[in-house]
Amino acid sequence: FDTTNRDKFRPLYHHTPLYGWMNDANGLVYKDGEYHLYFQYNPYGSVWGNMHWGHSVSRDLVHWEHLPVALARDTMGHIFSGSSVVDLANTAGYGDGTIVSFYTSASDRNGQIECMAYSKDNGRTFTKYEKNPVLTPFDGLKDFRDPKVFWYEPQQKWVMIVSADKEMRFFSSKDLKDWTYMSAFGKGYGMQPSQFECPDMVQLAVDGDGNHKKWALIVNINPGCLFGGSATQYFIGDFDGTNFTCDTKPEVVKWMDWGKDHYATVCFSNTGERVIAVPWMSNWQYANIIPTQQYRSANALPRELTMYSEGKDIYMAVNPVKELEALRKETKEIPAFTVDNGKEFTIETLFDGGDGAFEMNIDLTTNADCSGFKLMNSKGEYIDIYLDMKDGKLVMDRVHSGIVDFGKNAIPHEKEAHDNRVKNSINYVDDFALATWGPLSKDKQHRLQLFVDKCSIEIFLDGGKVAMTNLVFPNEPYNSLSFYSRNGSTKVNACKLYALGL
Ligand code: FRU
Image 1 (cartoon, helix red, strand yellow):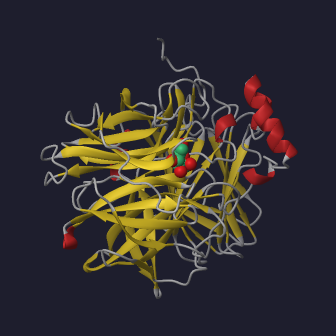
Image 2 (cartoon, rainbow, N blue to C red):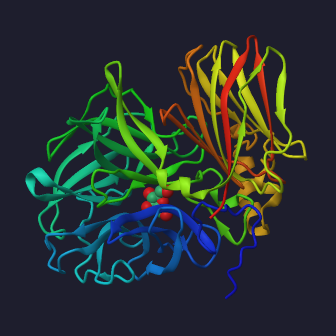
């Protein structure tokens, strides 16, 4: 049937399903020049339900081709989130280089159990393993899902991490079919209390030093986001093949993204030294009622993860993949300028016929208390982004960004969901407010890289030390920019704009 786009908020260069509902990225795997993006998918409507694995494929992480459903819901239940590996050494016996995927079968009857499927045609179609499930919770745990499988080279074995309520459980296997319990990590760690979901674990060189590698255990939590709802945290530590041990005290929280619309983030397998993550760009607080209809939810931009040290601590830097530079169409450079205390510097028109799909790179130095800019449309809607130098925070305020009360635009059966939320006193305007991070330093140059695409803003600050991803629904695309400075002056050393298109 006709899948021509009917939603004005559909992003131009972010991956979305052609129609229907999407949540988590699943089974991300690279093989023979193709990046496979499977995803939690409901082909029967634009709200959560009837979970399948949808499938898209890309050769460059930028242009995506939509393919038929890869794993359909069956009599064992929903096909929930999971991962894929390339079985290079044929450990499972389906042939060298077979893609083998793991997912959770979820039903009231069986609970949440881990299943396997394999593909002999480069990830197009899958055969479900005849002896599924391969793993069930030994203690009957209700929340036991989202298996992440990876090869642990030093001990020539597979490791599976399963999110188990408020911890992660680790299992091992030689053949991908028989799994043995090894250990658990997470009780009392990080943001509390939250449900652990969608694990991943990657090893990275710290500060580019191949002799100093650390593991990052990525844990998606819901709720737990600083500003409500869903978010992604990570723990840095060591893994000896059996146990993960965390470098920091249990109460230390490291966020992979400081915005409200970054969730279920997991990484591609089989990409060698490169670690590439793909987030789902929404939040369970309102994902089902955002103002689109033909489809719901996009993925945030693919991000490359690296590790750096700061003092005694180690963090991940999160940057958009360099392949995205291919999207740059028209370039505009604004000569350097200074904004004095209380003054503004406005660029009336960013792009002729601006369609709300662009990138901005801003380098600034400030001695002010607050340096920022408003990204605006002609309806007076704006998003306010600033460096609060007093508190050392990056802030994105979307209170005036456009449609913030999704309920008003919800189609009738969703109105009920919205009204229930209001009854339960979740105030959309409040929880749409601020996202912050610190510290920042005065008189040091800071770089903000921003990606705007119809209904989303992603910021990467200072080489990915902070990533912040938020949805916005302006009634008209933003197409002007106004810088301001409070209690001091702001020097914009460089401001480069790129219109983006596929
Ligand atoms: C995370 C999640 C997963 C689950 C899936 C179901 O967003 O709740 O834990 O597998 O969504 O769609």
